[in-house]
Image 1 (cartoon, rainbow, N blue to C red):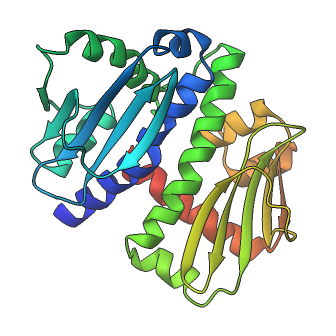
Image 2 (cartoon, helix red, strand yellow):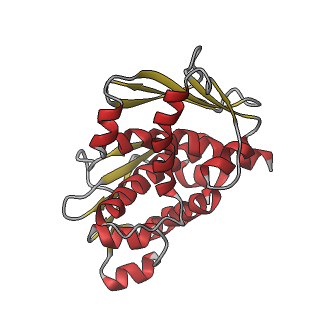
Length: 257
């Protein structure tokens, strides 16, 4: 279904590709590799002008920019949204890679970031504690932005959830000092953010007891009910709305799997 493909592509472009920045921030080796770079890598769906972004890799950091760039060094161009989604979700999706011959060193140097994004895939359940912690951070960052993007795309279920809602905060955090994200909802509008929202008490706060507990829940190895029974998850605030937003989170997970 074309509309569904476009929606999934929008979530992946706006919520998954920005995580390349996190991968570099968490990997000093990659930051060192890109210390002298000043290059642009673009992703675009050729059949849809709304589905495009580019990554500015400069001075050891990655900067995400929505939309097309006039002269990227490498351009991953997909004929349609389904082809882009296939590549990003671990299936077969082969794009045109413009600039690959002329800028082969850029393509080769960028590939570790593409491989790093595969950590988001449900099949990836690393044993290494650092990689498990990184996956938790990436999944939390992804889900908060994806929820907001789902709303901005006009998804009926999400708009029904956010439309009548006054100014409220939905917070996710990992105790004692792990990553945290939030979603602010106000009369049909949404905004995702990182960290703890401090201006008011969250309407719903999902608190994971540890990185390991968060890993088990966010990778679907246990559900929220079991997690609460085992002490891995505490939901502070409205249980009804907590259940509703957890259901929408599961929808997103199913869409991008």
